[in-house]
Length: 402
Image (cartoon, rainbow, N blue to C red; front, side, top):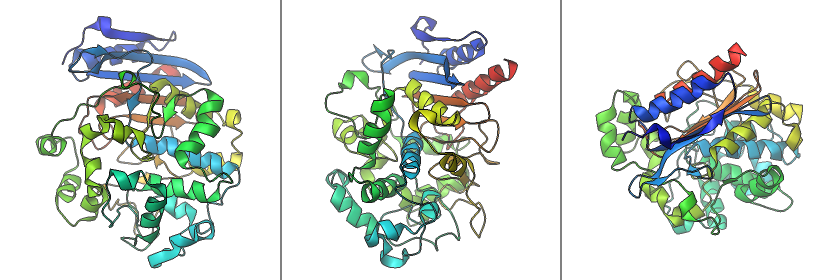
């Protein structure tokens, strides 16, 4: 649907006008329902744009305080929380997970390190035990289920995107090592969101009205995927739709998470899904990444932690082929890193995560920049959605000219 330019709001600093032009173009081309884009450079907000509709059916506009669910872009925010926990000394990246969480050692996982787990090398991208919303909302039961899971490959031999599961493992790692035994959503709220005045939630509080949340629009997502094969790598689609493959297993349990529009319900928004249902302000995601991009002083992040998350993980023994996404990927400690298949930022020091449908947020330490984009019209690109790409590209073109 095409949006009138009068529905585009926000501002850009002098020198960043091109970003606004590209943002407006996305709407004029009919590629958006509602969206927001923001960037911070060297601690200063240089882009803050929003527009279109919060909800396509009601024609309720996307406002300055509209928050949006960002699917796997949540993993990057969770990764920042894990980085803070590391800075606080909760765990060592090269120590075995089982040292902190003895139950984890079941079924061949006794030697998996924290580094391997966070770098998508543990083979724990799928869960065999059937789960539903009730199970997902039961922290103790989820801990039992994921602790009992058997790896799908020998840890460190291969890697594969832990698209849904990583957040649960991160949360339990924090819960086991935090003196207050908080979940990752609670830890993020107390140690990052409140001190910084940031609005981003892993598990939406009941006092946040639905009228502030953009509704996601993606009807019949799996069916429409077949008609968007040019936008998605064919090996991924083939593996995704074939029962029994690692890719299919990784995204088929719990089944309810495969229903995109189910994320519009309060019951789905309320539970903590630290890999897939974070909800927040786009400008606040950009600000948070900018803090890490500039050295993390506001949160007291140690240089050791920053260097660790900026450095790509060592390649698995059998190479960079991703057993889940069926493309070449690179990861670091909870983040995706630039690769041949997916370039972002200005160097391999950049880190962040994209989300299903097109959202993306990341840090570029070389330029001390934090960038974020999110929308409520789901696209079909596995990564590098053109709507986001033209915006982030414009941001760095403007920075280069400064």
